[in-house]
Each structure stands twice: as structure tokens, then as C-alpha cells.
Amino acid sequence: MSYAVEQQSEYVLNSAVLSNSERNTGFEIEIKNIVTSFQIFEHIEKPYLTAQFIIIDTSNLIQDYDFQGGEKLTIDIIQSEEQNDGISITKEFLIDKIEETSRTDETTDSIIFHCVEYHTFKSSLQNISRSYTGSIDSIISKIFSEYLERDVISLGEDGVGTIKVIIPNLNPIEAASWLKKRAVSNIGMPYFLYSVLGTKNLIMRDLGSIFSDPVMNINVPFVFAPSMASSLHGIHKYYNILDFKISETEDLQSLIGEGLVGGEYYFYDTMTAVPFRVEHNVEDNFRELSTLNLIGGDNERFVFGPDYKLNDKNISTYKSRSITQMSSSGVYNNGISNFKSYQQENSSSNHKRKIFARSMKAFLAKSPIQITVKGREFLTGDENYTIGKVIRILFIDNESTNENTSQILFDTKKSGDYVICAARHTFDNDVYNTTLSCGRLGSLSEEIVL
Image 1 (tube, rainbow, N blue to C red):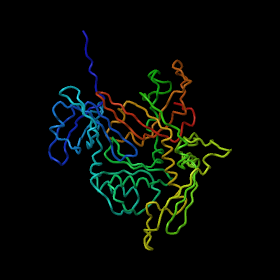
Image 2: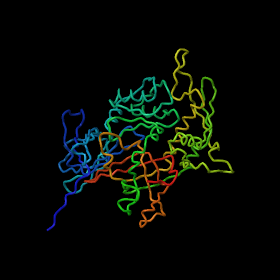
Image 3: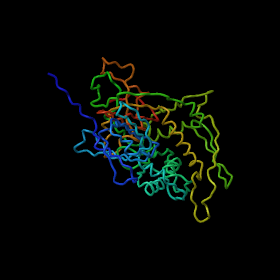
Image 4: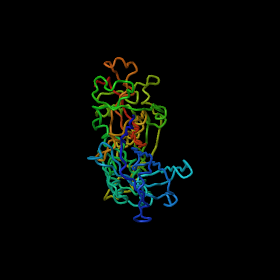
């Protein structure tokens, strides 16, 4: 006699309610039983989530419901182990298009919906053409609160100060993204504005404050060791990496061509016709971050090799590009009040922070890695555990062997502390995995000891 073993799902889709927003108030349909799989995407450069849902239609859903491309899909989901006492996650999506419809048999359709978080729909219908005065993060918060009814949590120390801008006929999300490009921290780190799965608010945060946080999983690192024993020597607990991908890395040539390794910049004030000249040397930037303990204290294993030379001269000292930019005109200086405009700064050192920020954002993507892990640690509604978090990822050194686990060494090139820049949450039948796309500014400074 044989017995069937029931496999418990790793997640529970409590509800998936389809409505047509205000087109037909009160009309809703529960479709969770016909959702076969779905994916939710987070990205550090996007102030909204995207998603893809696959449903099986055997009852003329598309025909009877009269899809027009503006429908709302509200889901409520929770990690199965937290079903009794955990906090579920509720998200509203706009079905912005039907990507594909195919017939699995004569009476069954397989339909793929592409979705974006619902506040993008509200944003697309509105236009901003007005002035704002304040810090960049406060202006962005006002825009999201006034037009989209969403809260923005700002973290980090603003380095721009009070500015006055006229939003040039942009929708709210476009306006916020335009303003975010100008934001830099007080040490010159770039800002990111993003939406996350775990909480309802959006987050605006600079890269420096991200790296100043403790590593989220320092005691339970992600380790790629599929053939090792369940407990590695010295590691009481770790998360197994199911798969990883490293591709299109270490493109130093492109960064040199963009003037982000070494270059000279001129920022012209059109009212005084006097330029601020700034010399950029990325090695100086990395050494400053090392001094500030943002890439491992005295760590000098940057994602930029400071020992690269040409004709006995460090490559970062070459002025590979000369770039000129109009920075200000004194348009908001009337003798009584004086507000900085969008690009205006009053010193070369302040302009230098703009280049610092551009450079660090580019180098963050120079040595990317993508890992796939079990998603149970990320599906919780009490906090953000993905985008903008620093995680430790370890790879076994090639000289380590399966037979001698007491001598486990870790690859100091691939291993390190990474920032999660994107996440793809895949819910397929009963399985829930998360693929994390990560970037970093430094490798491990020495052999790690656990």
C-alpha cells in the first residue's frame, strides 16, 4: 500500500481580487483559484513594483469582463509558516496589458497579465507644472503625498540643501525621478527612490547610509555550496544559494569613456560667466569611503584597481574626458531671497559631489551578481528585507575540497557584502524562490573567519 504525501505550499495567496477601479464601482471578482503562478519585481531605481500573473481561464473571463487595460488586481499574500501569527502583504496592481493569450485546449486559455503598482496609473493621469521650494526629499514627499497619496520615508543626510525648482510638465513619478537624479548626500553619495514588497511606504535613501547599516545576515550568510554537508565547518547556520549568475562584469573601459574614472569638469554660471573647474579621480573617492568605513575600514580591495597604470601613471589621474555643463544662472536671486536652482552650487567642492555620486552609482553596477535563494526570509509585511539591504554572500574557494570541510576557504573575489539592487519573487505552484541582483563597491579585505 502506498500513501500520497501532501506537499505544503511555501506561500499562501489569501486573495486576488480583480476590479475595474471606478469604471464600475462595486464590481469585483476573486480569481486566486485560477492564478497558476506569478512574479513580483522590485528595483532600486523604480518607485513602483511590477508583476506578471498567469491565469487559466475556462469561463470566458476576458470576454465577459471586457478588459480595457485599466483593471485593478489586489493581492494579499503571506509566507505559509507565518499564516497564523504573521503580517500579510497587500499590494494593488494595475493590469496595464495582456502580454499573451494562448489556448491549452479547446476550452481553456492561458493568459499572462503584465502589471505595475497602482499608483503609477494615478501618476500617468496627472501633470505637474508648478514651483516647489525646499530640500529635494521634502519636495518628493510632497509630490507623492499630494498626487498619489503615498508616503515616502527619507533616510540619509541631504547634501544639497534648499532649492527652488519648476517641475517642467511631468507626471508625479517622472517629477520625483528627475529630482532624485539631483540629490546627493553630504559626502557625495547618490540617492535611490524605490518601492518595496514588505512595506506600504516608498523609500528614498543614499548609498552611504545603506552601506553604514550592519550586514543583514552576517551570522547566516548566503553560501553557494550545493555538494557540501548540511553544516559547513564553523557555520552553525547559513542560507543555501540555489543558483547564481555572474555576467557582463568589470567593464572598466566604458567607465573610463564616461569620465567616471578620471576627468575634468567645468560647471558654468551663465550670470557671471565664471566656470567652476573640478578634477575627478575615482581612487580618491574610494579611499575616502574606506576612511569612512563604508567598504570595510582599511579595505583597499575596491571594485576599481588603484594599481592600474599607464606609463607609470595611475589611470585615474588621466583626464580621460573634459565635460562642460551649465550649472546656474542666478534666476532665483532677487537681492532679498536667494534660492539655488536645480543644478546650482556655490563651490567646486559641492559640484564635485555630483561627479562622486555618478561615479559611485556606476561602480556599484561594475561587479554585479545574481543569486537565487528560497524566498521565505523576504515575504513578511513587518519590514523591508530586500531592496537597499546589505547581505553577505560567500563562495567556496576553488582549492577547498568536499572531503576536507575543516579547511573551508572562501573566494575573496566573488565573496563579499553586497547591496540588493533588484529582486524577482517567483511564486510557481507551491514553490517560492527569490532572485536577488546585487552590486558592491569592495571585495573581502581578507580571508573570512566564521
